[in-house]
Amino acid sequence: AQSVAQPEDQVNVAEGNPLTVKCTYSVSGNPYLFWYVQYPNRGLQFLLKYITGDNLVKGSYGFEAEFNKSQTSFHLKKPSALVSDSALYFCAVRDGGNTPLVFGKGTRLSVIA
Amino acid sequence: DTAVSQTPKYLVTQMGNDKSIKCEQNLGHDTMYWYKQDSKKFLKIMFSYNNKELIINETVPNRFSPKSPDKAHLNLHINSLELGDSAVYFCASTARPGVASEAFFGQGTRLTVV
Image 1 (cartoon, rainbow over the protein chains, first blue to last red):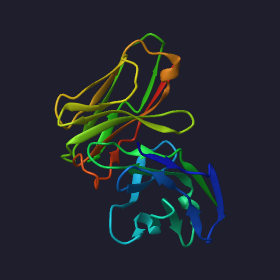
Image 2 (cartoon, each protein chain N blue to C red; image 1 turned 30 degrees about the horizontal axis):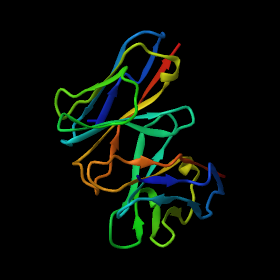
Image 3 (cartoon, chains in turn yellow, red; image 1 turned 90 degrees about the horizontal axis):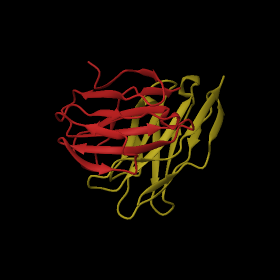
Image 4 (tube, each protein chain N blue to C red; image 1 turned 60 degrees about the vertical axis):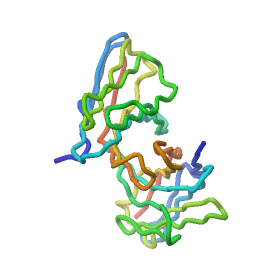
């Protein structure tokens, strides 16, 4: 069975600084990895995904993520954080077929002006 | 022209009541899901339907019954509501039961059982 770990409940970063939100995964086959963001009282919005190909994936709002197979990681990054990036971020994985997305517990990002 | 829409957005009800949450997607997707987000924001899959057929039913009390009249709709009916059912319920859809498809989520229904 697939699983995702987000080791940090909370990440604080100053506006303008780079940010990283960590994610590690476990799947039996090839991993298909996703990042979502949730703003207060809103649904989940898709940011980016890794299926195959380049290990560095670019997504919405200037976010990118780096797939590292040897470390089974898929960390979310942004070169320069904005206050408006403050939200709850979820990493998710699926391993094929009809399996639904399995989510990590989420990491709350707080960008301080 | 919301892609995945749920109604109602908020639902407050008493213990023991029966309630339904409706979900519709206009994306032409084949697969729809119900997720539950608890008070700690943990998201857990409840059900998955593909072309109106139930394909995944996680360990959920049988008081919860999904119904899919057509592939664009997936409703969730809950009988004999309990305090522990209070949560945010999200509907989602994907293009096909394929690995490359990201899921699109509705805005959620916040259910409060009093």
